[in-house]
Image (cartoon, rainbow, N blue to C red; front, side):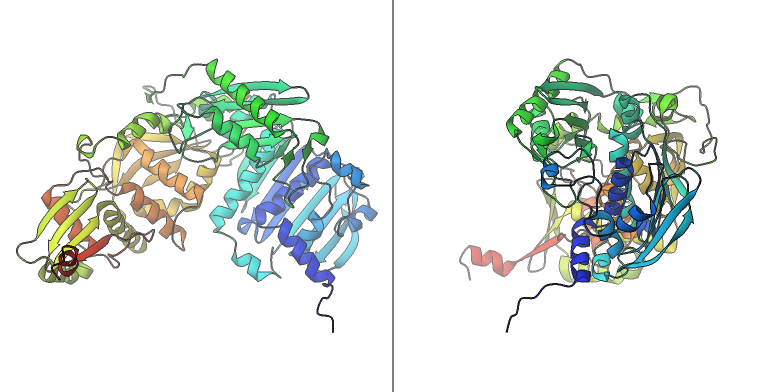
Length: 619
């Protein structure tokens, strides 16, 4: 009896959907590609519930007839290729015809389109399997696709989605990647009835790049150009002193398609070799134009990976163009500025929308000078001005690094709830002859009865701050320290979204923040007792952690508390005196879980006297 069988159409559709539709951002990407291929010059994206509840993409492209509307959601239906040879000369974003079929297989799907100017169109609705309705519908020239209840029939896939904040960030990144390379196209994005961005057609590519990266960043990038035969490279790269802690602001394009291309990444990395610190990354927008038959875009279902025929030539051209651009420019001066003439600007634009991005003639005002109110201006440039000095500091001997804990260890008393646990720790563990000493300015050795306890000072302090922060958030009892000269922070769009989605949590921690027009926020206060606040850089580091989605915890509050704890805790390399070491140990054992930090790393390790004696063969 045969055990091999052919899968049903429903199963194969869901398998295909799993290859194309990984998350809400995948849906947005596929729908935008279709719209741009249809000649759209105005694109509207609307989402609710981070894309799980609704994704709507509306365009003003050429639209479709009734027959095409009914054919479009079928498997492998396309107007872009006709034969296998066409796969060697792809000039459009989409071409395989699996996108709409895959999306409709895992959602409640609606497609409305019209190719006429009289408002008459056609609509089809699909409920995960087949067409439910097919009927006339009023629609202006163009197409609208609505995707509701994504993954309603594939709960396993839905469980793998990240937090709403992360999914919103991915959607935003997807839209920005199209907006960056298509300056003549208008983009609008509304999330949960709130305008996230509005990009009008830009007069130049540089203006659009400035709208996405920010005017401050554009002060520290240089243009690049290069070519070899039919291969042309253009773009913008940052000067060596302007770097980031991640690759988030690296955008690579091949024939207007956003890609992850290892040769491009390798050329970018090699061009900056030995000129930027380890684990720092330049800002880059690099676009390659080459003949369609010189690149294969059909090597991955999501079309994010491509294969270039002559990788060596690509590597050399890109690397040489970057090095020439960097050598032709000198680094501009980085400084913190204070405006003596404050000017207040309302936090909303003339249309009444808060934090809406724009382009064109407004770009430099919005992302450059911007509003001030007796505010120290800490912009994106200030965030990286110490890249080299911090790198050097990390490699100095511990004794050269002055003690400056970022939270006062002297004034923070153990929590009342577990004071008995602290007394027990003192009575049973320490005894009368307990000794504390610091090793390598990073570890605290405590002599206890029957052995030695080694405490990781950073991990221990991280646990203390994390538990305190969670308690403050739960009890809603923040204590804020007001700032005499308020600070304005310029954020990226992703960081601005992180702020909008978690502002309430920051307020419960003791941060006094408010929108300040464009992509700026105003800092009026920070948690009382916070040391080495560093004029807002600590807050920006927390935003970066949120955007990178690298924090432990099941809730937004826990993830922010974990980042706050990690960024605020006393670092390795800081010398502690005897009182501070003892207080740190007391505070650690007053927490609910003194044995690990929020990231799961151990805070203490006990070495018994028996173990030491076995080392020396005394047992």
